[in-house]
Image (cartoon, rainbow, N blue to C red; front, side, top):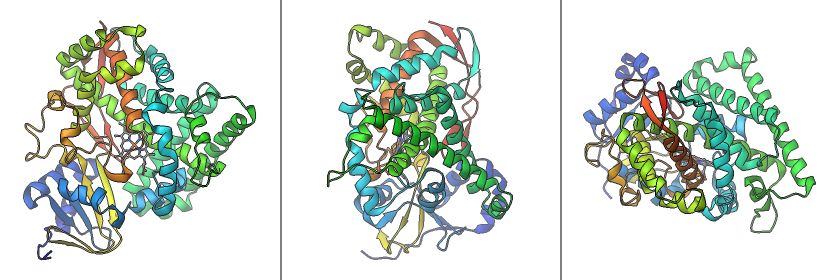
Length: 443
Ligand code: HEM
């Protein structure tokens, strides 16, 4: 392949001029540059080769799938996050990652998740008790608690103490906030060290590990089975027949908390906001769910048949993908369609931009769940809410089942009414909602 194309470069001065705007929300700056320079441009900041911003879906598939062996995650996941959650599925690389993925995959298989969905539903119904008819509230904290509780109860059933679960949620969220601070203000690293701030959060991470160690030890010595995610993780074995060490298991649990909670609560919140703005889709979900036979029919059968709700969730994650960018670094020099990518280049794939690319989507900014009437498969080359390739989200089925249960429960009981003008976003590590003020009327 001839290597002759120059990657357009955005001058550093442009970045500096807009730095305040970028700090608040970098997405409009990215969008302007994609329109001006095309689907790949380079910004010479921070790293040796600068950062490549990409919304070229073919390039994304090349990096995440076809030539994935030549790409690793950036230091944000493999170093910065590791100090809080350890080295597990999300944060490891190479042989270690491969071994863990192979071992953990069966625990997230649909057939295993079937054991968890009735418990998920119980948790979700209990969390929705805070929503009162005619009440107005910011729904994000409610859905955030819901997502954490769903993960924690899927892991430990009722076997963990309430105060332990609350503490684990507090620590997970506090450490995520600290990581955001470190990434947004890297120049304060010396101060976080000197002032003892970093140690405070590392101690919290240690406290979470101690709580989890107790839970795991009690489970192991009890000899009881709960058929929850913890039992499934304890059952899994490597090729040589051995199980995970306790430290590894704790890393994986901390990672499941981190990867599985904020992403899901963001997606659920945006979905509620979109439904509030498009009540006709609430009615469609309600009517479909009502025809599926109620509690007499097995929950998994109803979840699988709830096509309208799935379409709405797919469209919601198209417009507001919680994981709104995916990053990779190449190990050796690479070439793609005549572009040369030097080894060690930082590539940022904007899922947000790929999901709204005007060449790929009709009326890209409009909420049109009907585009997913045949599911998401027809869009597999341009739609990446859960990533792509071998590192695709292991919890995608878990998240979809949880979100279908939550949305159908909510819409069955309430009409959701918007108490905001337009949906606003806060792009941090994940794409977070900002103004999800909703009113609920009894249906
Ligand atoms: C709507 C909800 C969710 C979204 C949008 C989401 C998105 C993603 C994405 C995009 C990746 C790939 C990141 C990359 O390639 O760099 C990923 C990985 C991962 N996700 Fe999710 N996720 C969600 C829910 C969950 C849940 C519920 C769990 C666990 C219960 C989970 C666990 C993980 C793990 C462990 C990985 C790392 C997989 C690996 O590297 O092998 N996620 N997720």
